[in-house]
Length: 558
Ligand code: ADP
Ligand code: MG
Image 1 (cartoon, rainbow, N blue to C red):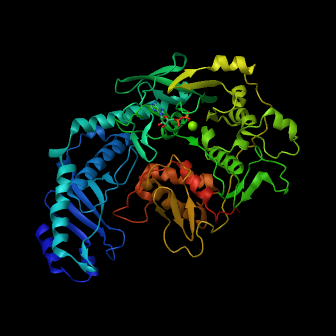
Image 2: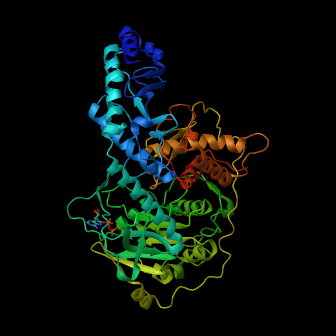
Image 3: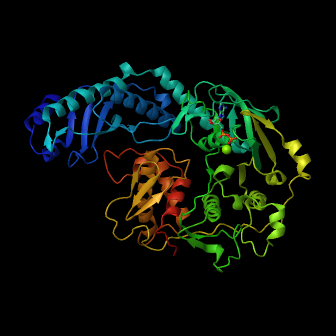
């Protein structure tokens, strides 16, 4: 119990740091149980992994909030925020795996058969390399129970706020479920606040933000399970082009759509910006590697004679990187792609008439996206939302044109049609072949010299063996805890693909699908190599797992 734990800690005071190893185990601290799963080896190592567990009866969570997966995700998200707030009040550098603006499936807090469990990373106090026993005793036997007390137990739980949080989440996901049936790629609710406070902040802009208003011709309404009804702009299936002058809010709208694959918390401003879960935001990433991707719809007849139906490079140009990312995303199941002129390779996007006249088709290996956007739709069923303020080229191929004017969207499809002439024509077909399964060569996902599990370094990087995988361009990977989950996924994929005998996945696509199905069935913790405390993970989309494998410089195909 607490007294014994305090006594142990006092007894090891000022001994070598390794004495903390004795802490392993379970303790009853009154308001909660404490489980110490992993003790850091030295003061500079990652903090020690501990769990606080409160009986379900003591937490008294309303059962109806836990009776579906979405309810459990939103409830544990709510509790993770409460734990983070409580830990911040108590200082001590405790890490809680705190959520950001999105509501994601996380391992920070879990509702298990035993109880409600908060997973913490706690730096054990040291002076130099010696144990500070008394301080550790206060931390573990006083601060931690207070955190549990003020975040997980019924007495301090704001049940009304929790219910609102869960209801919002269920409504948002219900809306997402219905997008495809209504022929929509995305929805932006009236009143939404899209701009963010700063380039490095995900919080809503305060002061001067113009709330979103839908153009009448694109207005749709959804009646949601809670009885709530929301109205806003439906972005239709097909090819949608966003035009408008510089600084009128085009990129801000597209970014909000891209982030709309994740649900946002109340007060974020993007609560009702909901996109199809498999929409993929793509950008040019010159310098990335590509392994065996069929980019022949965009690139053929290279001067080098390289085969673009199975194209590999260690250093892609802007245009080839974007073509590869697009084909990869579509093969990985994206039903919509989102592109912004600001972050796209110009020569990949379009070519104007005079350049077409000057450089004959036989000499130009690139077929620009403007010529492929309709085949992509007709042959693969993939919709496009594209920001193009600088060229009229896309007006010819657009089903819908939205003009941003001082942050207000207008439907200018009819006017664009007048300028462009005829409606977009059906295309001949046969541009995009069927997606071809790609199988990594045996062992490439277990690189030589890889001694540690793959690990995230922040949101944008994964250390994998000797390599680092750069995910900076993956704007829909929003949290370092998602990146850590992707890192674990790479190790699990290696097991799936290299499993001896039967049961091995045939190719990357089926391996990643099998892994995701396992996470659906067993929960996100199934990714973790550790039992007990799984670390701080958040659920990534299958698309981001594909993106990481595809950017791994050691990837070779069988
Ligand atoms: P564009 O892509 O059309 O050039 P941006 O989307 O980059 O324009 O927006 C330009 C600036 O306007 C940004 O600083 C952005 O934060 C701000 N902004 C965007 N939408 C709004 C809005 N609805 N209300 C207020 N400011 C906005
Ligand atoms: Mg822009």
